[in-house]
Image (cartoon, rainbow, N blue to C red; front, side, top):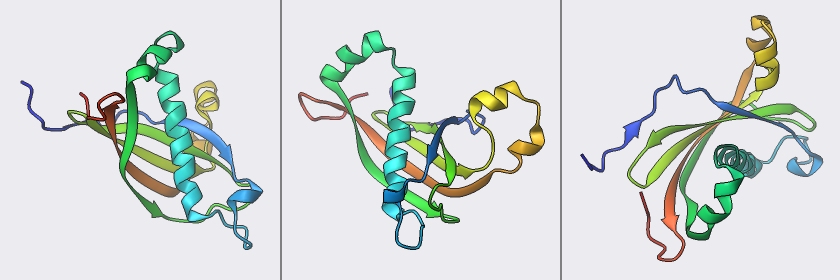
Length: 151
């Protein structure tokens, strides 16, 4: 059927992980990252997430007619990130709709990169992760020519 109901994605779908470091220009005078910058890192991680999934040979043709627009985003702050902190942004699609989809973001201090986690059996290091921020964004697939949402 072609119903418009959204289909949730299993919570078992793994996150993709991207590494970052808090820069000087990300911070206020107290050394804490500006709240708005969390969302800029979400956007950067989402862009990388898409680039990792669309083969370069297809990308240029796809970008001629298709774009993704942010419709809504919300965030929950658990703890601040501070100047020079290393952190990861975990990204995954959590819902597919007819033309929209939800993307979850999780900012983590500590823990292991995806490459290190694959190469090591040290579960204790992975347990040291601290989630400092979580966000949920709704994106809509749009036809560039018409400006209308597309499935």
